[in-house]
Each structure stands twice: as C-alpha cells, then as structure tokens.
Length: 101
Figure 1 (cartoon, rainbow, N blue to C red):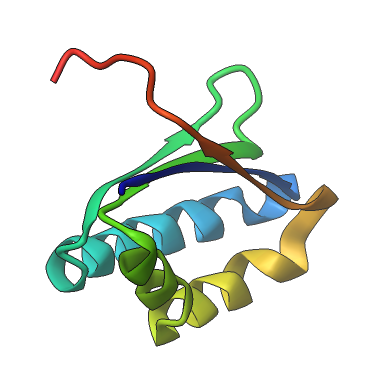
Figure 2 (cartoon, rainbow, N blue to C red):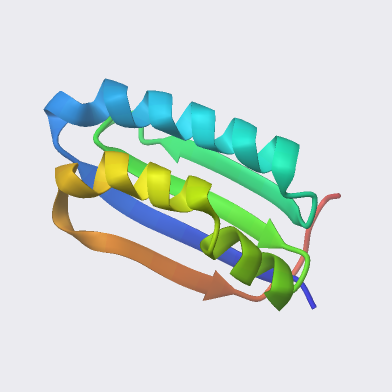
C-alpha cells in the first residue's frame, strides 16, 4: 500500500542556497538509488524562499523505511538541521483521494 507524505520546514535566510543545493543532490540520489520511492519532489515557497515542502510517494512501508534509514538522508539532515527555524521538520501522512495520473 503506497505511503503519501509531505515534509515542511523553514531555514535561516543565510542557508537557503546551501539547503537548495543539498536538496538537488539528495533528490538525484533518490532518483538513482530508490526505485520504490515512486515520487520525490521538493518545492520552495515563492513568497518566502526560506520555506520548503517535500512531497513523497513510497511504494510501501519497506520503501519508506529504506529511505529513512539511508546514509543520504543523514547527510541531507546534517546540512539543513543546523539552520532550521520555527521548529523541526513536520512530516504529515496522507491518503490519496484522486489523481490525474
């Protein structure tokens, strides 16, 4: 059963470029190494570039766990975590209601 999830967070303005570069590297890793992560997209808010949202679709719980336990996740966390403002990353699970794909 697929897992649909988002992650929302905000970073210090001085870290935006560093975090954006880390996101690009991390998403490349996911694309090349996690076939059971069927969608991973990261967005940056236009009106406040310090805010990011990541959207994930994992094939199943095993894919979700594999993603969360990867060294790449720890490496990405090491980049953004010291620069978080407004609290920790908020992960939210969803159920899909409808899609155009």
